[in-house]
Amino acid sequence: MATLGKFYADYQHLDWHELLTGLAATNLRLVETISSRTNDELYGHPWYGKWTKGRMVQFNTSSPYANARVRIRKWLKVVS
Image (cartoon, rainbow, N blue to C red; front, side, top):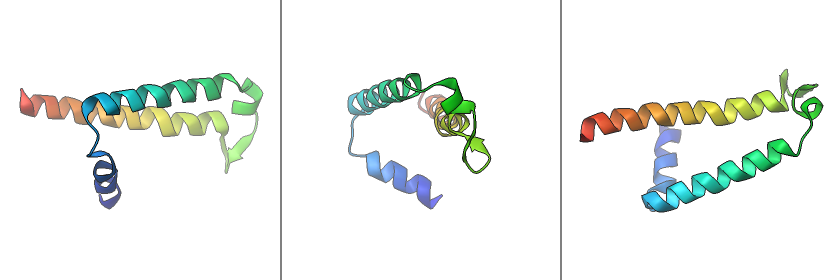
């Protein structure tokens, strides 16, 4: 939980608009980065241990979004 607390502490000074703008910019950079690579570079060989670069991108992008979605829905139930 200490890491999660640090994440929230690091971003608590940003307002909703700044958070959304940062998310959109990060998403755009990620899409550009992935689009500039070939399927072979992303999935053709291990990059981190047994995992390919494309699989590591999936691990580090979709999982946090799923986690955030669950947390936001839980929060919305509390505040509504």
